[in-house]
Image (cartoon, rainbow, N blue to C red):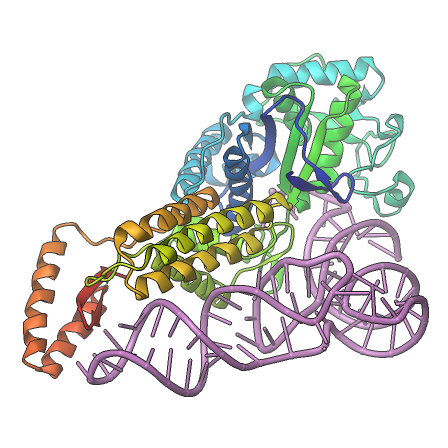
Length: 465
RNA sequence: GGCGUCGUGGCCAAGUGGUAAGGCAAGGGUCUGCAAAACCCUCAUCACGGGUCCGAAUCCCGUCGACGCCUCCA
């Protein structure tokens, strides 16, 4: 039984879907006004892993991830660059999609955008006004009336009274209550705007997600996800809007990932401590970022630095070692040992599932996988043939792909391989003549070109990396 | 100030009542001409102080500390 920690109840709960074997999952995407950084990569990876695991468990996942393509940040940046805001948003959407692809993240089924959901947004705003949950203010904005919503604050565990103290009301706002938030914002000159019953304007930050949910997945969904920095106010407000509008529970499970930390602080655009996804991928493999995420609990802060990245990279190497071919002189191991290896593979598969079923406990799942790697390597050392290793390696590959790890050996240009083979062959002759310094020289030079040579009693193997 | 999460070996990190998984690093060993890889061995009593219990990292109280949110944010 899959259990998932639900932010709403602060407990792990048995996961049950509204519709048999179908998971409706909505994940809050990004506001597209700048290059994405590795913090965004983390959240995207977390939900990619969740999605892959749900599919592995036999669910059909309706995965929706939105793009917020109209808001203050985009408009400001567009003004800076003297670019059309919508074109700028499009540019960053394309860019972000490419980042996700490079990170081996499966594309969501649907990527709705605020600007393409105007009809539903206005329908909701209208409905909320009719039901008394919202009001058009004198300044042309439409606000949600938090005092009308009895359980406002249930997701973030806040009470309206507690929040009032710290609430800041900007001058000129026409709110009834300081915590009321905008559903619709009247357009200022030069801003992108849409016609509405309340005059030209654009949607507030939160309503778009409610509307996109309604449009793409319906009134109720199974999982709503995002970073834990969105719990308040964004998700709190989504709940308020959606549930006030439909009168039904909005999302059954709220899943939130922890923040990526750089130098002890959350990585964020406003703090400026940013490592871009593209920058990261120019230095390290996508698997490394994924391994870093897998090494920790998705809800906890993730420490991002050279030390943790190096460890992740080495850990990956270790997983890859399990996939290597049998030794050149493999004579086979007794059938008893071979079937033991297969039982180990089955046991690992079971521990893996148990771990992942417990709120996606990836560190524990990885521990299980490492156990299998050790068993495979031991069998190989004992002389297992490729045929004997294959079933266990198949399981290893399968489990890693559930986590989204590719474990690709590095590759050079394919043409080089033949020449390296030749060089290695010649070096073997040189070694037979015990010309060690020459053979070591070849090994060192190849190493600096990215080719690793490994000698053993039975022969020499080489690989990229 | 309020709300929330959390504090496990050099680093990352599982473990929520019965005497501490895994990875990285380090040291020793097998193998090797040397090296690399792989394999074997070694390496923590769980922030601090009280309490409950036959028994606590795990429950309760307190203290200290970290991080997130309360304002745009994955």
